[in-house]
Length: 255
Image (cartoon, rainbow, N blue to C red; front, side, top):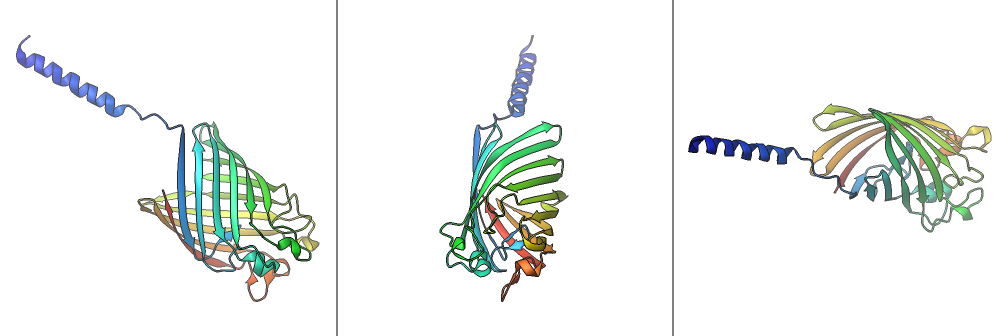
C-alpha cells in the first residue's frame, strides 16, 4: 500500500469518526428550570378579567423532570377581589402547581395535576356572602397532536364563592402552527359553579389567540375574548361585566 492510499484511508476514517460524533445526541438532562416575565393589557382567567380591564405584570418559574414530574409558581396583580367582591385586601394572585406528564400512546399525551390559586392576605371572607378567595383545583388533560381537552375540578370553595366546592371547568383548544413563528389557538370552555341561584355563575367562554415568536425568548400575543357571563352575577358598577368581549395584548420573555 503506497503513501497516497494510506493517507486516503486515514482521511476516510477521520471523516467517518467526525460524522459519528456529530450524529450522537446529547444526553437528556435530568431536569430543566425555566423562568418567564410578561405584561398584558388585561389579565383574563377563563375569559373573565382579573384586573378590571387594566394591565397586569406577570412572572413565573417552572421545574420539569425527565420522568414527567413538574412543579411551578406563577404570579400576577389582580383587582377583582377589591372591585368585584368589595374586600379591602387582595391585590395579588400566586399560583402553586405540580403534576405529571407522560405520553400514553403515539401522539397522545396525558397531564394530571393540582393547582392552588392563592391570594395572599385577601379579606374576601370578611364580606357578606363571600368566603376566602384561595382555591384548590385538580385537573386532567389529554392532548392528541394539536388538540387538547382539559377538565378542572375545585376541591375547595371556588374563587370567593360560598358553598361552591365541586365547581368545574371543561375546555378544548387547538394549537395551530401557521409558520414564521406564528401560532393560532382557538379555545372554548364552560364554567359551572354549584349552589348559585338560577345557575347565574355558569357561563361559556371563547377566545382566539394569535402569538408570534420574536426570537431570543421573546414572544408577543393578541387575544380576543367573549363570554355569555350573566350581568346578574358578573357585573359590578362601575367596572361592568367581567366577561365583556375584549382584546388583550401581551409580551413575554422566557429564559
